[in-house]
Length: 194
Length: 135
Image (cartoon, rainbow over all chains, first blue to last red; front, side, top):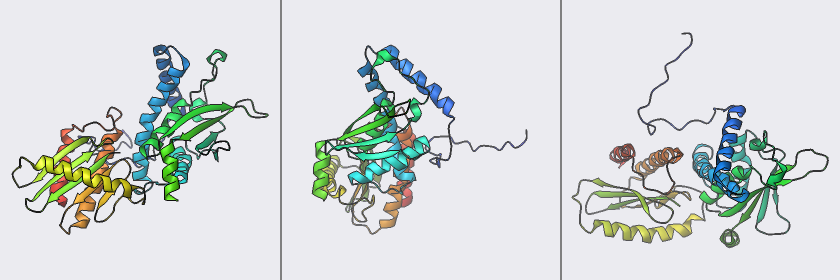
């Protein structure tokens, strides 16, 4: 066979070096997998909020691991201790690694001190999903919200993270906003650190 | 918050290496060294561990470095603490870095619940090998 190299076989996963992260996965493959994930959970729950929670939990597991991996790989084992630092880490580094681009925007909430929003014109996971009218405000972006929550929680910034559709003027598809509401202790610590 | 603690006692040339998880529950332990196990060693380790952890908690938020030369190396998930009197700083740092990498590999396993005990015998073998190499 032409050009077939011998891939080094490792006896154990601990021997294998951590991947450099240059590998990409086909979007269609992911879309199929994600659609199966949603459908599987749909058959196991009775209502929308339960479905959202399950997707969030699935995302949380990813987020926790992404945090450790990226801290080690991209940031040379330095971690974020400030609020803006961790937010910009999520908005740029995490998004870049997961979705191939930085998030569209990061905003601070105007009404509440503890709210921040990461917005995306079209969330990658929602690209091929359309929500039937009878499911109301359900958003598969709950998976991404879970990822963000996993990252924040692991870094020591507990928060409630949710995904929302925000209809935009002149556009057919609504924008998706990930709303992050930090716990009280985070704000107190931020204030203490000045 | 997961922590790795390395305790080394002057008298016995023992090192006790513990990874402690979020709620101060140990998820991995290893005794490294030549001295015979003492009965009360375990209690002593726990005591020193918890006392030092409290100090680390406060320190944690003042720096984004993961390795504090003479005291710890940590991020919010992993805290390494070293009580020792040896001067082998670089060796310890390298040891911690390598164990940290091992921990990440364990963590990447989707079937591993973060914060639970690490039961892999391979992990155990590798940690001990690293300890022999660097300490």
